Image 1 (tube, rainbow, N blue to C red):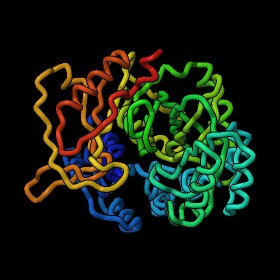
Image 2 (cartoon, one colour; image 1 turned 60 degrees about the horizontal axis):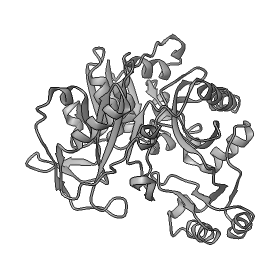
Image 3 (spheres, one colour; image 1 turned 120 degrees about the vertical axis):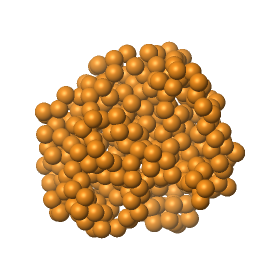
Length: 425
């Protein structure tokens, strides 16, 4: 089959990397792709969704996979489906689960799904009154898409009020913050669970743990994610069952009853408090950087799962993962991330001489481009992800950091403690 992947980050690179190993996949196109995706397929410079759908028709694309949230929230799936094309991802209506935090929180309440106490408002006075009734810390979220940065964990009530004021005035996140959610802070540990859905049926993928903060020991500002590992020992069969029964099933049932059946990836951001799951957020696509680790753990063909989810036949798929195998990914970020853009810097990757490392690691390229001489440059905030595989989290972690040592560019920075919570156990 021929596949079109929409997006340009490490998530899209890793999906392409997994499909490249798949015997049933002939050709891969990326729209627009990045400076390294041309190693896996062909980059296409088409931004308009209608033009992209026409391209998919002309090239007889069998499956389109949408990586990032923006195209999903803006209705790319509806446009492709109207043209009779097979596309993996939710409709514009269902994508509101990520496009609007207010919509998402209201769905959680309507469907009886455990979540933090909250208020949604566009009034600073209303937000302030709610904040003053709460304990500290307090979570303040911009309603719209903010590339993973629209959540403030305020340590004091005054800080929460200032955050709300900055969002509602448009100073902090523009139009994305003109409506906000203020909610109680849940004290536990976070997990990422992905359910691949076809509207009715679903497949739960191994749970991951992301590391959002910039610095070691979960300090510094929130980022798009500085590393992740899969699977995590912080979940057991009992907790998986709670998530299915209390979160996934009622969400899919509720959305179907409300006329927007969910197809694609339901990314559930959970806080586990005393072994009870609470939903922090929904996203409607694979997580980044969790996807970079998940994709290399599949034993069964990824294309089969994605195609059957997109065509409503997920009940017929058998999804298998590599036994007793873990993946750890470490994000290498640019010098000024996440505060401002950095000067482009050439990326040098040493030749890997150890067969063990060569066979059990890979680089998922994200914020990269090529100069006129074909040199690979670090041009984005999160530049790439070094992924290591192993029979234990420690072995996978060690290989990931060995790979980090093989990659060089000016200003390179990363966390040194990815998977620390699992390794403490």
